[in-house]
Length: 263
Image 1 (cartoon, rainbow, N blue to C red):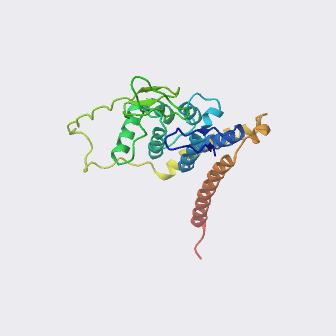
Image 2: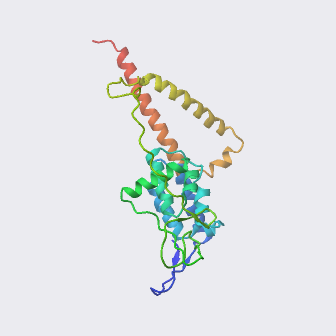
Image 3: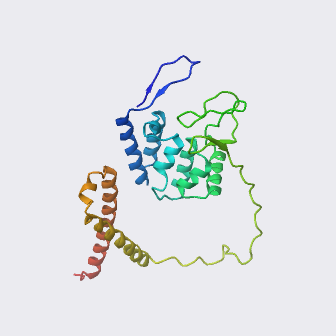
C-alpha cells in the first residue's frame, strides 16, 4: 500500500506513490483481472481502490488516473448488460466521463448516461463532483479536483486529467402510440431455437476457438509466452474445460441409457 503522511486536519494529505516494483505487481493484477472480467468485478473494485490510493498511474508514467484506467481497461473484455452497468458506475465513481466510459465498455454515450442516471435514481451515490473556485480549477494527480468551495456537478475529468463539461441528460421521449400490429399478450411467442440445434452451433464456434488455441501452441513464440501467462489464464481455461467435460458426460450418459436393452 502507499505511504500516507500524518497531517493536521487543516493540512493537505500527502500520498506517496507506490515504488516501481509494487506498482508493477498491482498493475499486472489489474490487467489480469480485466482480461478475465466475468465474475471478478468485486476483485477489480478492490484493486482499483488500492491503485488509486497508491497513485499507480504516476509510477507507470501516465498523465492522469483516468488515462491509466482507459489504457488498462479499454477494449480488453466483453461483458453482459448487468456487468456493463456495474463497470460504468465503477468508472464514474473514479472520475471518468461519459465519453471515456462509453469507449471502454463498448456502449453508446446515451446508454452510459441512461445507466448512470438510473443508478442515481435507485439511490446509489453519484460520483464525487468537481470543485470550481473562481475561474481556476486544479486537478490532483489522482484524477480528482484539488480546491475548496462550492461543488458543481457540471464537470468531469477526461483521460488527459483536464476538466470538461458534463453532458446534459436528454429529455425522456414521450411514449409512442401503441402499434396495432405490434405483438400482444395474445400473440403466440416466436419459436425458440431447439436445444440440439443451439448446441451444434455453439460446438462449431467452440471448435474454431480450440483450433486457434492449438495453433498458438505451434507458434515459435509459445514457449517464451508461457512464462508470461498467469493463474487467471489457467483458471479461465480450466473453467471452460470442466464445463465442456460435464456437458460431454451428460450427453454420453444419455446415449448409453438410450442403447441399453431392458432386462
